[in-house]
Image 1 (cartoon, rainbow, N blue to C red):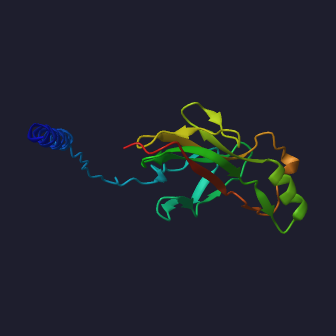
Image 2: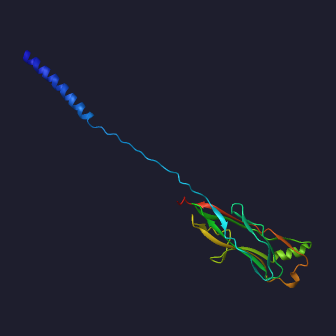
Length: 201
């Protein structure tokens, strides 16, 4: 009986020791994983503007009365006044559209005004307007810009060289010349640029 008790005690001790060994085995494998980091939100900007406005270039008896200026944060060219007198006269100005921002800029809208004429002699004003052209050109390619242009200015470095030209057609006949001054308006141009793609740092 004493011998069987010893077997039971040893059996219980063996079971306890094995449970402790198993728990020690499991407790022996522990790993802590950590993640650390930081971030920066870089400063980026949208900056499409006018620059390098040239002086008037005239042909014939065309002349400049008031020179244009770049204003409104370099997003507007305005207040020029020119004068045409003879068929074939023209006045033009060159300027650049510059993209100094971090996003490419696509030309998505272009509106070129149509000359509007007024005079004390309405019929003469109409004839003069029919003989005026107002156009915008890319001077690099020497092509006229239209609403379908859609050119893209590269981020940070994009530059486009443009020119506006007001011309009194040289096909105007002597009979079509006005006998009173004709005031010309409607010479506005609007270029709309839209973000193209993601920022370039």
